[in-house]
Length: 377
Image (cartoon, helix red, strand yellow):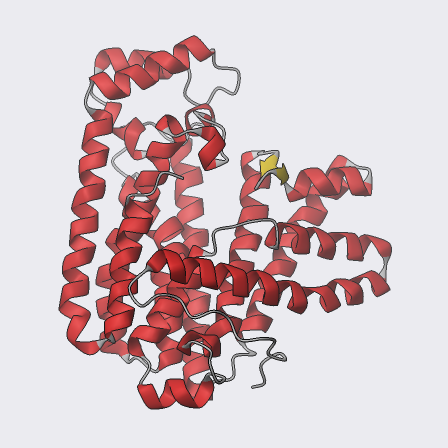
């Protein structure tokens, strides 16, 4: 398997700073992803103007910001479990060890592009990363609502295809790439089943005994492609065995759930100018978040919630009343406490893994716990 032509080596981040790793990974992925996608957009445009427009929309969203946190986790896991010999043999002179897994880092970001395109269409969100959502852009470019929406679904599918292609360009032993490809397929199965579980639960009574728990949905829909999936990709490419993969799941699952619970909190109590997301949108869209679940059983809070939940036209005064109820009932405090509990669980799992991993990899992953569970954006 042959990797794309390697431009200048990326900067080497500080040994114990996940933030520095994140910045280095973001700079590298942004540069390399643009180089990788441009000829594909050009090839699509040769087929027809419309096909080129769809490919360009994928390119635009993929390169329009993004923290590249998932790519950084691929890099951290690769560093944690690759032997010195294997790292040195694959990394260009002066480059960090994780340069060998850069195609996989691009792949996970392209996978997120696909999921964001479909999510925005399903949720009828008009804005993504400070610009128009892909379905909104394509409705305008193609001149028809139905055609734009259909093209957006296909744009997501195209991004998924690009993601598979990028992953398979990883220049590492074939058996490792195959293991990573299996993990990549598993991510997609879990994300889709988690999305289905969340969508279908929204239409059922809150007390229905057959509803999956909020954390079960978070583990499938968010933890799988935000934390556990990227970690398993990096570890697989480093040559980690099944025992290491099982340990990683014990670390990544609670961290991924904590990440989504923090996202739920920011969606209600965060600063929209910092998060880039409209406040209270989860309530208006009728999403069964942990905060909403924590209000169940409080008659006053449930009465307030009934006026706004799933209502796009909900009055701001009613929304503010629900938010106050989340504070006064202790719902916010309980979710915050659960985030701390899950982060502590992830740290304990990391301590168990420590003897089998590199010190730098361990430090990066320890930093990731704070970066994901304690973030403000």
